[in-house]
Image 1 (tube, rainbow, N blue to C red):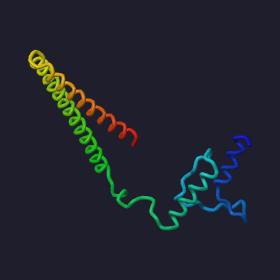
Image 2 (cartoon, one colour; image 1 turned 30 degrees about the vertical axis):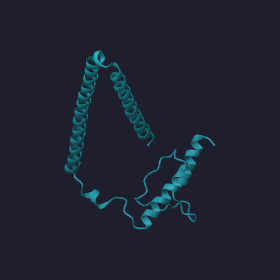
Image 3 (cartoon, rainbow, N blue to C red; image 1 turned 90 degrees about the vertical axis):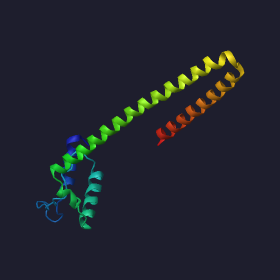
Length: 153
């Protein structure tokens, strides 16, 4: 079937025609939107059935509160979203400063240990370095596992 023939058939199937009188078309309710011509016939039927079942049960297509929304409500909502984004940005930037502070403190503690303990007690320095490496490895693997689980979700 060629594309124009298919479009004509879809258009014919899209129109609701009385089987007794082919020249008389039934009025389609306002609820039904104009469906695209290139949409498959099965999809059109599914959409029509879903819309008819929702209209038959008396369900409203819109929540009553949506009719009461004004432009002021929308602007207020968008302002709140902007404030939330600004707060999240400032929170993340402050967290970066704390991470930098923690890194500098850790490096200064490490350099103090090396400078102070290297000439006095090399065995103690080796043990402390082993513990620090094990702690850093556990911390890094914990963050890696958490990131992997978060990415998996």
